Amino acid sequence: MTSQQQLVDALTAEGALPDEWRDTVTSVDRGLFIPNRIGDVDKAADPEEWARLVYADVPVVTQVDDGEGDGPGRPTSSSSMPSLMLDMLSLLGVQDGHRVGEVGAGTGLNAAWLAHRLGVENVSTVEYDPVVAERARANLAAAGLPVPVLTGDGMAGLPDHAPLDRLICTCTVRTVPYAWVAQTPGGRIVTPWGGSFHSYSFAVLDVADGVARGRFVGDPDFMWSRDQRGRRWAIADVYHRQEGEKSTTPVDPREIDGDADALFAIGTQLRDAYPQLHHADDGSGEATYWLLGDDGTSWATVEYVPDRTHFEVEQHGPRRLWSEAEAAWNWWLDQGRPTRDRFGLTVDQNAQRLWLDDHLLPHCHQPNGTPRHADPFLLRRRFDTEPHR
Image 1: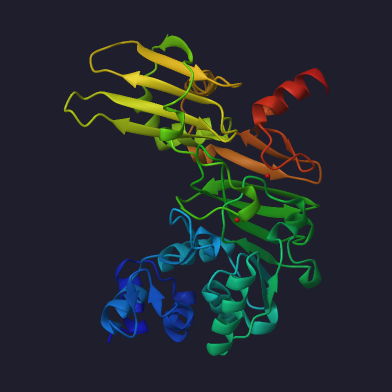
Image 2: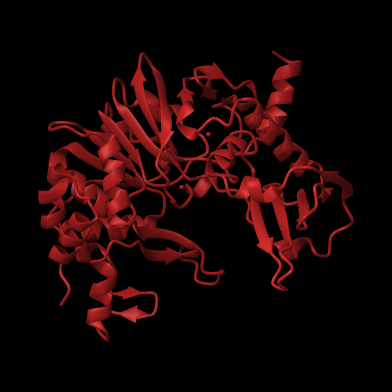
């Protein structure tokens, strides 16, 4: 039977197990936090396959479609890839005696690791989904690490357990709530951060004098905070559309899609629309680049054809999504193609602000009092005329 030691050995071979976490990972059995049934694999019927999945460095989905059972099978809770968990904990930089709050209990394994390292009395976690929260409580109790698991909105933090030295969030957020900053004075916040266009970064923020400030690292792929998800709709939903506004562009959309730094930079401005590049399956080399807005009505396409210098564009809805993406691309080029590590985030009691090399990006102000899905371009226009699962 595959065992926890095999997971330890795998992580060691990958160079993914820091010395300070070795005893914890060795001592806390991941199998106690994984349900007996994983997709089509049942522990009773096939214990070897179940153990192979549990004790490998892979994520294990533990809930789909918010547990409602009649959706498309979208993952909504999981046990994350252990090496990614360790990356995140290394960024958190915990020390003996630290008090840590976690947003997003999931299976409870991350809280268990923290409790083993720091003591149960120094760790608390909050989970939005009551069913997931109850399972995490049971898992933690079975492991002998009964961390308090609160049920509620993690965007409010853990006020009854503050002040904290560290706060870790295990779901992606668009806006870092100021409640987290207020509850972590002089500490550190680590969270997956992004928007619909690009959501694959950790924000690592240090708090001083009521302000959190830091930069972006890593390449995580986490599920969204339940109340900060964007609208996801299928390309098929717009095939019956009305005809859009047509134009051309000299920008090859494949250049955008293939450059991680460009995707991040454009994503700082186009935070509520998501891209999909679809290659033709007829051997022609052609491709269609789609942009679908979270508003459910705006879309754009760019038709790539080999050997052309300009490409057909079609845009529909209240926004011109390709025009916004192209403007952001040209801005990124004008800045000298800055890499992601040159961007940073500041959160105070009034706003979430993005910056490049310490220069504020005015179009990315996001006041904490605005709706979480507010369009940053609309916010920019408002600021020009008037003065954040």
